Image (cartoon, rainbow, N blue to C red; front, side):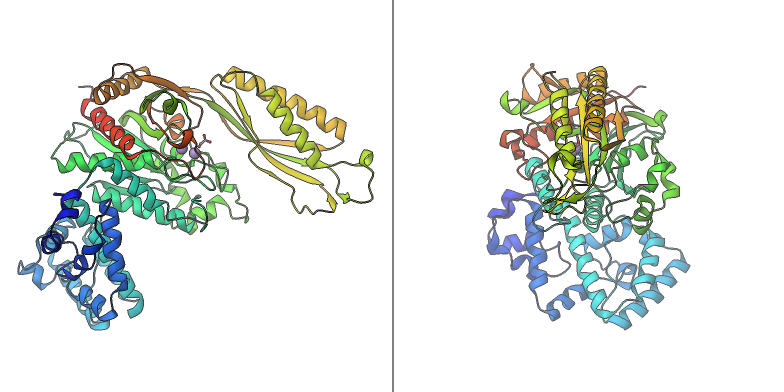
Length: 579
Ligand code: GLV
Ligand code: MN
Ligand code: MN
């Protein structure tokens, strides 16, 4: 490996030489980015080189594609591949093809090269012989333009894998760069939105999968789109420590909520594996596909599937376009009937741990970079529909109106009153709409969301009951109908004392400070669901920008991410495995 710092400071010829293996036999690619140094991460170096390929002429791009060897072709058999290609082809088991497989590959490679005038290029990481043959069979049907684009995309992926193996950089800045890169996949140009099974969400999952493959994990995508990467332990039937968080986002989100708890473990595992470490247990990283409940109000969908707590009735939920969850899962090429098999058997698990930004100001205000979570507040979420009577805004006197929005306004204030004054209790109306509303029409209908949370179920339930009583009074007085539909009800979840202690030990070892801040989480997390099946613990990392979250200014520093990575590494290396 070579440090990013060294890459940035090498004289140009040595820089090109150091990167000569990244784009197959094509030193012109690194040559063209020599003057764009310094790069602040391996990922930005990768992006710059890929951009140089994009800007190159079609002839140069074709030369780059043609610089690649055939998969399991004559050069491979004669041992004439670059060391990188040799390793990659062996990794996919291509060196061990049966005579029939060789014959089929040879035949397909022949068709392909004849049709397109360049060899079939595929990033084989994560593939096996059968899937390589299947990919060839499929791609040989494409048009030349399409295949040229696919080949260049595969070359960019290959370069990403090779670069990750080559560049040594501080984990904190790498994690931040990864989060920045994921945030480019969004449903909107002006804001980060990544809701369940949209194209942005699929692209996010594909890149997470690539990063897991690059870290040397065995990767599967389950029936709800969770991306699951396993680092198998040394023992024959090693038990599993599960870690992870979600990759979907709220609307106009920050870049780190959820994603930190995926990217940090991937980076740490890559580093440990690279250093030759083997653990006596399996570490499985789960990138949960859905936690925020934005598109289908299906909060915790990903972790529910993994915990075996998925409710099939959920498949009938619809998004704002009327697409059912079932249809969306099928359209993504996943099979709703397979959801039960996504569940982990509780008996195989050593526990679940989640790394997450705090999403609040406590650690920041106390100058503590890391904290141990003691419990996660429970929440009730409801969708409320108020029906009054629409009418002409100019003709109906005020005392004769049945205005649904005015009733909603009163309800919002009632929720604020019922949830104020008790520490740990909070109530929020985050969405409010007047469907088909117009400036000159009295609102006949109003829809709102209600979210009530507390660190005690008794307090939360008491507040909810008070809100419902107020809702009845408002409905009676204003002669409107108020319908409540509960979409989430999860109790407050304590973190396992053992996990809290292990995190506290790791934090004090990496910070050198015996005093460790312990704090409850007001935000919900996948860890709440996983606590139903195994011992659960959470590490909080300090936010910047006043602790703001669920907002584009959400941030954390590279130093804090680095320290959190050290704490996670320490946690893994010291995790006690029952004998
Ligand atoms: C999850 O982000 C929550 O709403 O707490
Ligand atoms: Mn969130
Ligand atoms: Mn989150």
